[in-house]
Image (cartoon, rainbow, N blue to C red; front, side, top):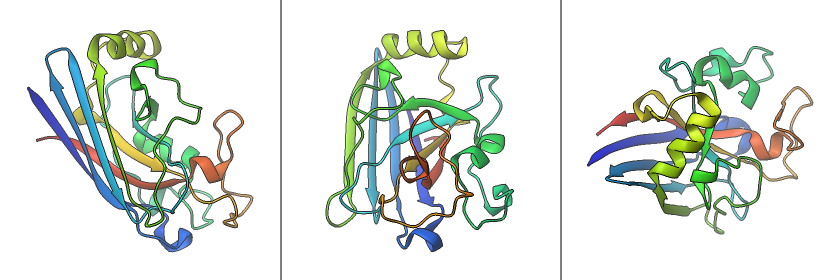
Length: 184
């Protein structure tokens, strides 16, 4: 059994009015990957997309800082995270093994901004999809970053904040928290 953990801390907190934080745990055990995420103080009563991001070539992904705010609008939006965190790889949704990123199967925060997400993923199915997308079956979890996304649709965002994921806007994709995955 191999366990990985990420301490998830806030991004864009001063702009979104909450301070999201929590933990993500990944436990490889035989043919299963058990994933558990618990978040606190997220924007309440909305769905939060969550994924791990990384580089297909195996480079070590890192959590972004304000240095990634290249357009200096005060927000770190999704496109600005790519140079340090790579691309969206695996969704932490109702079926991670399907690697179906844009859909409505992600956790929803309660009225206190809290949610828990827990799932057992068939490792062989996830690795097959991962190989199809990225050329390798090795998830390299200790080289990945967990992201939590999403702010209320009525939150005023400047036009400079980009979503860049198919037809989903920045309210859905704005990173609100991230954490580096490390081997426990």
